Picture 1 (cartoon, rainbow, N blue to C red):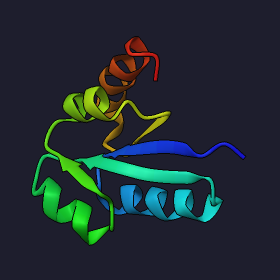
Picture 2: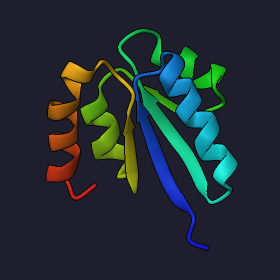
Picture 3: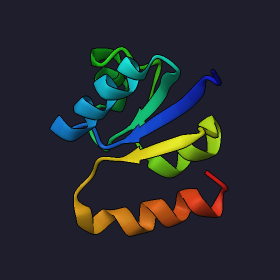
Length: 88
């Protein structure tokens, strides 16, 4: 089975739940997360290798197979379009 690389945008309750769900799949590695406050500390707290303060930088540098957008609904469109424009 192919191993997929995932990144998470937003690390509130929903972001944490997505990280745990992805890990349970067995073929997904969560490589990074993006959040505006204390990204490195929050990544360490969730045992994620890297934390970014800007989702655009994370997407550009990590080049994940999939991005989980776990932010308030009114922010999803901009983030999803950014990922799709980069073939994510």
